[in-house]
Length: 156
Image (cartoon, rainbow, N blue to C red; front, side, top):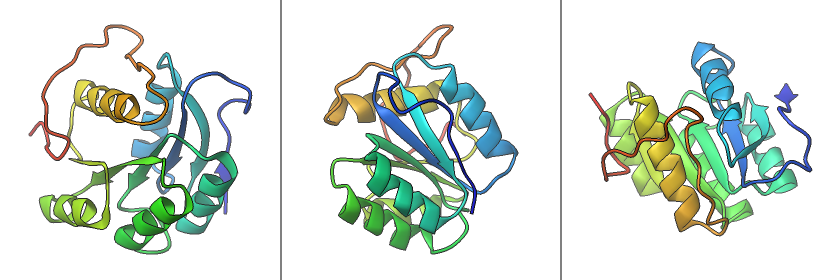
């Protein structure tokens, strides 16, 4: 399957992998996150096998995992990501609260139900990276506001 790369591997900042089926949401996330200061998108994976290969290859600080990723079920993929790269933080984007609970049980570091705000996404990414090995600060290019506290919430 397709694996697209946003920037060269030599770019500074913590590495982020977006693993989601090709659709408008993934394209929007990619456009939004590639403008963020302090992160480096190492690639886009459109199925679970590509995502797992890219985790091994790039050792990202953060994996953004959509529950609609083609291939294996999200809990299985999440466990395999953690087994391959235990230092990687995993942020799962879910369609339902049940999937959110499932993601937490499977080892997600955070899970957001779709419909979250841009601010909530950036806050969660920033806190996951601060909590992780990279200790980097990620801010939205324009403002970088911080809101909320709970990683397992939605803004709805």
